[in-house]
Length: 247
Ligand SMILES: NC(=O)c1ccc[n+]([C@@H]2O[C@H](COP(=O)([O-])OP(=O)(O)OC[C@H]3O[C@@H](n4cnc5c(N)ncnc54)[C@H](O)[C@@H]3O)[C@@H](O)[C@H]2O)c1
Image (cartoon, rainbow, N blue to C red; front, side, top):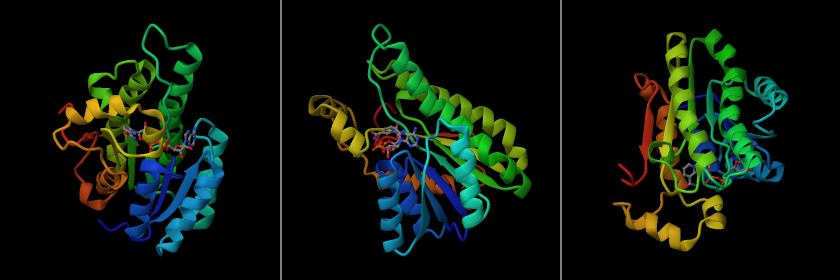
């Protein structure tokens, strides 16, 4: 699963799953653009990767902004070359069921998860097409499969990512670009630690055959595989990484 000297861009890489993905790809030899809305988080993450012997560069960006995508891709190009691997991971949650979710929260969640994924693909695909090789992994959620209760916007966005992934996979495979997504289950990240009530977490764990949360590194391992040459016949997959929850 060598990344050799490939250039990878990972969004939301300042912490959590994105940080674990960036560390893993860097450990496999990729030059990693650590992109995050949180500039300090991105910088600290890039420093952490460098301290581990990896090659990383922090870029402050908002995945909702096309101009930020153009700048990030240009920065990568000037630094180590064309982005060959994209991991659309940035995200956040605004809980609320169908009857309660505000229009503002609905649109905010869809914009970051779904529009952010689309803009990311649009930013990197032209150069990948030219190179005849690319890997794109979009981070969805197991909620895309069964629907999170009180999570209307998040579930719709994550299910949308699965559809967008399959559409892009159909369209781009002939250009040597493989697009897949992962559906993580409960993963021990800053977002979960700060947002999820212990009562809800315990309920999910009781339904999870492995009886624990994932470590971010366990999601990163699957993402790294999908980014690798070894995944050469994996196209349009929605890969569950849940410890068996909702299998
Ligand atoms: N943790 C879980 O249990 C879990 C489960 C399923 C899916 N996911 C998904 O995995 C991804 C990462 O989740 P996490 O738990 O590591 O979250 P996290 O909140 O710990 O990290 C998310 C990172 O994304 C960044 N970000 C947010 N909005 C951004 C934007 N507009 N532009 C650029 N960066 C932005 C944040 O600054 C943060 O550093 C998300 O897409 C999330 O929906 C997480």
